[in-house]
Figure (spheres, rainbow, N blue to C red):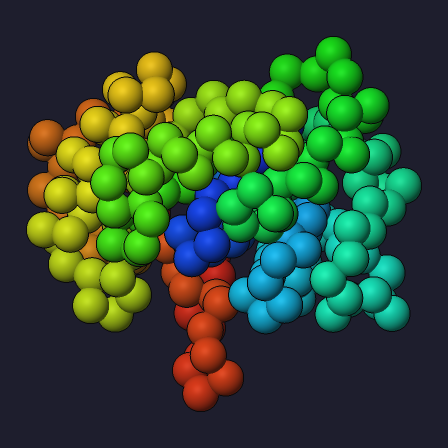
Length: 234
């Protein structure tokens, strides 16, 4: 199944869900399909694992990355630039917003009520069943409620990211898919796509997976590791 997204798409999720890796790789995937992509980094929670850490690799691929001013690049402040407001008022292709984890990061979305007014917006919650607090359906639904309350927006879809980094297996991905389906069904929203490490993509048995699969190339790695080279995975 093909993964096709357009318009304004907001990526949210609990701290440690892997939502930033998802946002980066989704941007690369859609860019490779010929879609114009703009990606705004609105993560105010985590000072290291942010979209901005991959900005040079993304820019080389022709993806427009909207960041805070350079002097505020490492600040944990609610910096909403005119450029962000402008890209929301006049979206084209795929406009992605990478928003910080949990309800704390989601508060920034409430400040975007004006530029988002009247716009069709998809808000996708990334869930990782291998992380604390999102290892149960009820936990995922609680995180959803917290995000929606702070963001003043409604989650419209689920993204399953059963990621154990280098230890991820095909069985982890399949189990994560089943779990993500349960969360989506319980929340009465679609399972938009799941993810898998690139190296598992060709080995994964997809006959029982009834949603698109996005291959991930890790970008947000510790200083002693090297990020994978971004580019088309298919």
